Amino acid sequence: MINEIREYTPMPGRLGDVIDLFGTVLIPLFRRHGMEVVQAGVTTIGDSCFNELVYTMRFSDLAEMERKWAAFLTDPEWPAALAEREKSGPLYQAIRRRVVDTGAFDSLLDGATA
Image 1 (tube, one colour):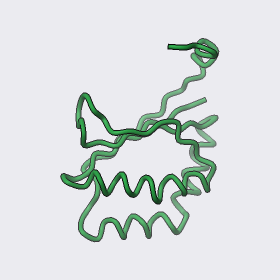
Image 2 (image 1 turned 180 degrees about the vertical axis):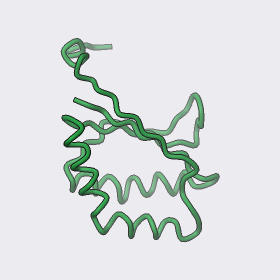
Image 3 (image 1 turned 45 degrees about the horizontal axis):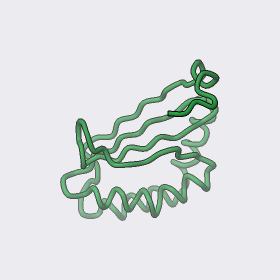
């Protein structure tokens, strides 16, 4: 299993627009393409606190991740929605992405509770 962590730092004053795009466009498109979001939120402590959307997606492996992102990125609804939101200027200052391989830890964490 792998997790992809995505961090979006909006332009000043645009966090609400980013959250709206995520909820009204991205989540439905992710579902359409079989993409699983396992968590989403706004950073409250650390770099970019209160001005950063962070979400994590789960995939079985890199091939699945690449295949699903390719389908998402070629969905005509995505570029149209982004272009509409960026009519008044760019949404993002920075976008960061990490992929974490959880394979070695999956069995250690099965049934673990905090």
